[in-house]
Image (cartoon, rainbow, N blue to C red):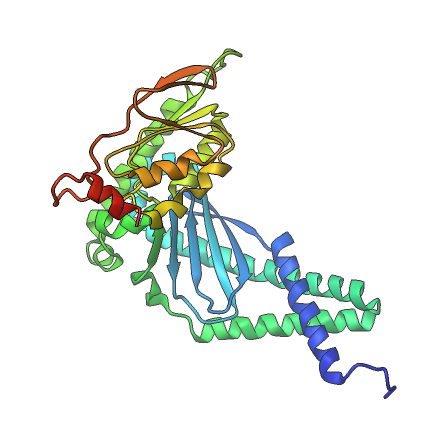
Amino acid sequence: MPANAPHPWLRALGLVTVVIAGAWLGLLTVGDVRVPVGPVNTTMTLRPSLSGGTKINVSPLGALRLDSHTAPVRLDVNVDQLDPERAQALVDHPERLSGLQDEVAHDVEHGTFDLALRSTVAVVAGATALGLAVYRRPRRALAAGGLALALLAVSGASAYATWNPKSVLEPRFSGLLSSAPSLVGDARSIVTEFDVYQRELARLVTNVTKLYDVTSTLPAYQPDPTTIRVLHVSDIHLNPASWKITASLVEQYKVDVIVDSGDTMDHGTAAENGFLDPVADLGVPYVWVRGNHDSLTTQHRLERMKNVHVLDDGRAETVAGLRFAGIGDPQFTPDRSAATGGDAAERLAGA
């Protein structure tokens, strides 16, 4: 071996690095599979992970995670939209709801099979292409592709061996879906009372489809060039999903100014101020007035942001061509079980 030749272990480590990077790029580029599951359209993909499992994203409501398997890959499922034609078919033929569970299971099985095939091609192609770009030798590139296929096979075997179908009974919710167990009951109650939930699902699908039918026939709104779009938000109370939803509405409806009428916080403490950071990235003026859950500490934090206009003491400001005036709530009462707070409560919030 030449004196300047790299150690075999270093060459092997370099090859593994190229394989992992190429496989990841392949999955990111062409690894998605669009799958209709029951009345909704979904996108499935595999992502590298240290713990495995399944993540189901229901934007903008949040996500739920399942400990479905242990492997270096995670299954991501994005719920994109409700398909109006399939939903209408369920409304027109409610007897199909009795077979909806089997239909969903079949759709998921079919989608998982398609995802496995597509992911295999994506992983091998990505690792081979990156191997050829790095080493510029076809044999090394093919070795990279073969190693990627072997790693994917091991990951699949690990997922199969550790597959836990009961994980659906213990999902972990995030975002607005965190309230799901208290709203619809836990997964075990859904299983034991499936007939009740089946009837409720029929009502839900019916209502959503009727709403779609009505809105789809409304005339398209053609705003005047001088139209000013105002988005009103209130009582956010540290909701972690609020800023993503707000940003989505700003972009979708070309909002000119946001008006927040308070109670952005829960207790108005200095520790909560970091929650306000995304306000600076919304890209439009933000008019804010203090609520009874917001302290002067909260107000001072917002006053330092360039796009925020704080209203208090009856002051009026012209923002986006509109005149706004407001007075912050004179009572700071984040805890209704305690007496109405004054200076002492404000000092405690700023501690």
